[in-house]
Amino acid sequence: MFQKRGFLVKESIGSAIIPVVRKNGADGEVKVKWRTIDKSALNGRDFEGGEGVLVFKHTEIEQNIMIPIIDDMTPEKDEHFEIELFDPEGGAKIGQINRTAVTITNDDDFNNVLSNMMQMTNANIHAMQVHHETYLGQIKDALNVNGGDIENATGMDYVLHFLTFGWKVIFALIPPPSICGGWLCFFVSLGAIGLLTAIVGDLAAIFGCLVHLDDAVTAITFVALGTSLPDTFASRAAATQEKYADNAVGNVTGSNSVNVFLGLGLPWLIASVYHLVNGTTFRVQAGSLGFSVGLFTGLSILTIGLLIARRTLAIFGKAELGGPTIPKYASGIFMIILWLIYVLVSSFQAYGHI
Image (cartoon, rainbow, N blue to C red; front, side, top):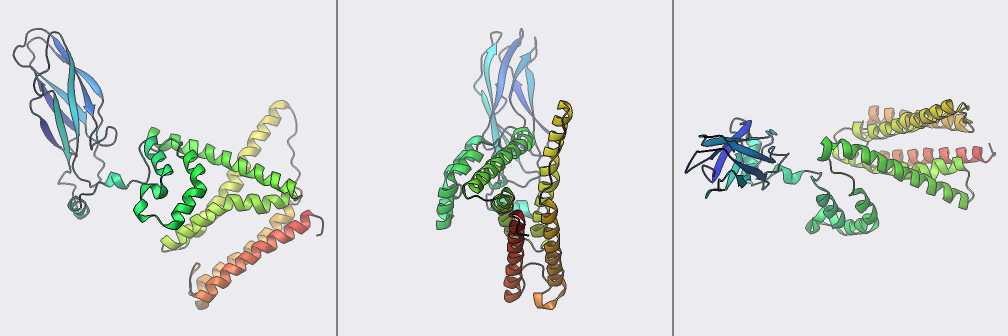
């Protein structure tokens, strides 16, 4: 049996030592199994538990269970787990106290003003995590409007939930970040995004065939829009939430860098190795690529000039994003016009009019 029904340990203790005693005799060797039971403290997050076996040698009356405590340096309220004794061997029996509770408290040496505030509001930092520890949590959020927070859900939340329900359920099947340190989630997510991109590309190509659009025109319109609209919303969120424009503009340049360097480099590497092994020549005709890149470069210079002007001129409020109302909308319209020029001129060239 355990010495007492409860133990109090600090989060920074390292390992909790829980004594198990043998009473009413010490002759012979006996064994007893033990296991941890998750409560508000979870195995792998707050402590390293599991199962084990205690062996009491002849004349031995006390053994210790050592449970490593994980110190995440995060202020949070007290949490607890339980340890249970079961399945004794060697003629022994389980005593009256067969289960004990281990309460993990914040170490006063690491507390600060924030932790005291959180304790006063009875908040648990793990309840505010963006990701989930289990598949069940992800699927529940995907099935519910606004992740289950119905009280704060707006009408638009219900509309978006209806429109994206299928995608939410599909991507809820991706492994949670808690598995394998997040690496499994990372690689499976990359694979899912690649598969989705392939589907979007094929659907756009089929649509282009149906309406008799040239492949080059389909690529710079429907395919480009389908892959870039998520970047648009991400840049908008970064622009409204950040003090500087770095994240908003950097998100776009970073995304395009991945598209050009990795999105082209990796397929070309695979194709080159394939043709090398088979003794064939890997050759892709440039087509209108030179014209499109030259046109894009010229329009990009105009865009960069606009950003420089917005940064330096008082009329723009010396802000690359936002600023006074009229210059702000004028800058947006100017960039949209540049995009339309690129699409129209590239389309005319693809159809032989230029």
